[in-house]
Image (cartoon, rainbow, N blue to C red; front, side, top):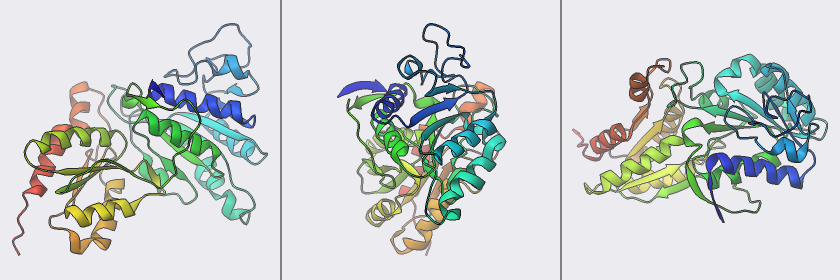
Length: 340
């Protein structure tokens, strides 16, 4: 086991799989440090957040491919390559840019298996950054994973810890269908123990962050980390919170959530996406349908407001669900008294 940041765990997962499988390639903007096939000497940054640093030196220009600034070209090339026996990792620098290349993802790669009669899927991974908190402004800070989860044929991963990031990314690279791997900017520096060897984490299996008896809190991505901090505060007030990190949104482990609701009778969902058609809405809908008899309080959705992400630091801080807000909302449903 080695202590790694989430950033290092993602890099390590790519390195491990590229060593094991020569069909794994990486393509995107600046993934080779902006070389563009020039073959320049020395290692460069490796992407806007440095996640691909060192890979060009080890694997060379045939497998670490700098592309033009064209998301459509990147995703189209990855989808096509996936049909030839390669396993491309395509980097969409910011998830906000999906609108430029969505046809290649949802109307092509996601439908290959269905349209080709189950003969061939698209074994490709789309790594992309999500989330607010670094002052990147409204066009580089959104949590758009509910849109991806809406599409049949796409698998959607939102890791929280370095351990999960490595295991889930290796699983994604080995998967035979397209996977969108969402990396939150604010989690890159999070540290944790990570095995040195290759390992996988099965999709559709949530992680119970901490066990509790009074309230179930589902936190998506970074929100699981904030929910865990809120649980510590609430425990000092005698409120026992069970925090669940879904890890994957498609497939989604609803069984773990329903089992928890049966125990606690209360549910709060913390989701950084905007409220209308959010993933919190999906979880709340299923819970209301399948766990209604267990619920002892209204379901609580804690999301961002229905507005673009602000650029001003003070407004951005107010935009993202906070530990304080989670504490207040969970306290409210914990103390809820039915009028019936």
